[in-house]
Amino acid sequence: MGFGDFLSKRMKRSIEKNIQKSTLTNENIAETLKEIRLALLEADVSVDVVKELISRIKTKAEGGYIQEGVKAHQQMVKLVHDELIEILGKELAPLDLGKKPTVIMMVGLQGSGKTTTANKLANLVRKKNSKNPLLVGLDIYRPGAIDQLVELGHQSNIPVFEKGKQDPIKTAKQAIEYANQNNHDVVILDTAGRLQIDKDLMNELNELRKQTNPSEILLVVDGMIGQEIINVTNEFNRLLKLTGVIVTKLDGDARGGATLSISHMTKLPIKFIGEGEGIKALAPFYPKRMADRLLG
Ligand code: GDP
Image (cartoon, rainbow, N blue to C red; front, side, top):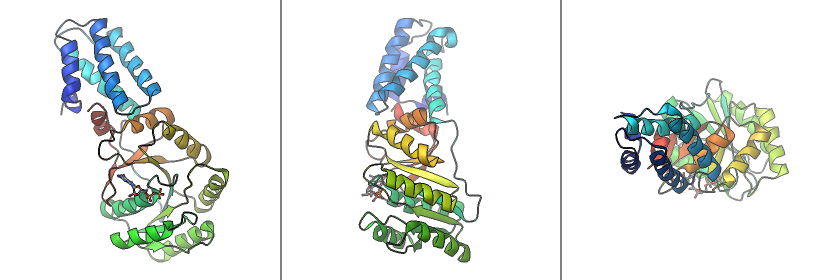
């Protein structure tokens, strides 16, 4: 597939219309950048990120990176695509599943999709990595959270370890012991979420991290919460040293601008995206695919 194929017809038309064969000018570069800017803003990419991206493309485009000639528009398409990939990360960021058992700690605010995603992830490592996962219910604060996990686990035939309202750290340790004895090679901790970040929540999560030594600490964030997503991600990362982010609710019309903002502002790898409520609606994050979608 050529670079041009990653971009939408609309974007390609705009670039081709503005940058005609051998007539490369600062004016038609500016006109094209204006359209790219609009497409990115429509995709909910934060204003700061759009500004920086456009300025980078502009500097390269005007600085002789694009040679005048028949292929000027193709070079422009490639340049935009490359800059998006540069921000989104070039490679797929895989899960670290080396340890036995691998402890994966899921963290996030209430309503972000953490419990649903824990179940989706368990299903994914079972199917794609041939693992035998164990889900662990540790959200003792949100009423019904543990029952919800048990129900989801039941539906997808994945065992759930839970001890009701018992201290989450004690429960997590018992779960790891249980996993060792019962051949579960991946342990997914569904930790407590709150409506907003607070000190107690962070202290509890930090203690849990120290006591369970997770290979992965994945923040689940709702892709629809707008610019607040950066503050939430930074705050969780500051205290817990995240290994990656999962952005949910990128189904339907949500175009995924949040992923570009997170990648650019926090430099954390996005490992998966949630694209629906169903168990299969969790996909590895492919930067190239997202670049295509953002300009869609
Ligand atoms: P938690 O409080 O973070 O554990 O959130 P839940 O897992 O209970 O999810 C909150 C709501 O978001 C539920 O209705 C989920 O079905 C829904 N949800 C989670 N992920 C996605 C997603 O990727 N797309 C859509 N459309 N809904 C999702």
